[in-house]
Length: 185
Image 1 (cartoon, rainbow, N blue to C red):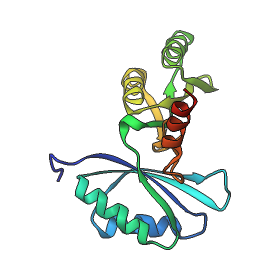
Image 2 (cartoon, rainbow, N blue to C red):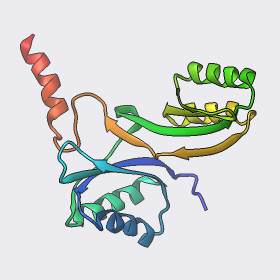
Image 3 (cartoon, one colour):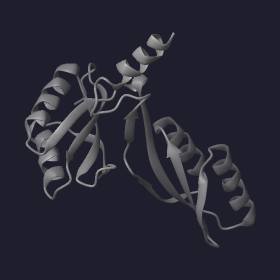
Image 4 (cartoon, helix red, strand yellow):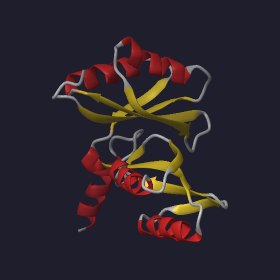
């Protein structure tokens, strides 16, 4: 049951790149009874560190509790909530769509071009399209493609980064960036 005070929160978590770490993190959410809406994991520029991007619905108190619990785990290096106004969020969505005639293929290609999506596979009876964007862009394209018949759809889950020079591992970077600008003047 959704509470009217629950909103979408995006967490960025730096963890040790080791087997079992993702399982530990996801178990924390299930033990607390919270559903993960989106989950994306990959290594960072340091091959010993992975970044987990987690989206969950909840209130501020719940998020604070989850973040504190995550920080207590031995394999977690850093936890940051990415606020919508200070972050860039993207997801990869691939659509396989029926396209049995050249007219239909041309219409689908035009839609893909409007959304700046890429045609990544073509066959006599289908087209596969890759789209990178936020939820609203993916939903809009999905709604248009449904009229042709979506054969398959896959989503990666949301990935996100803070805007500007701020990073998850250096809380002072953005402040320093703006202070340097002031000191030059």
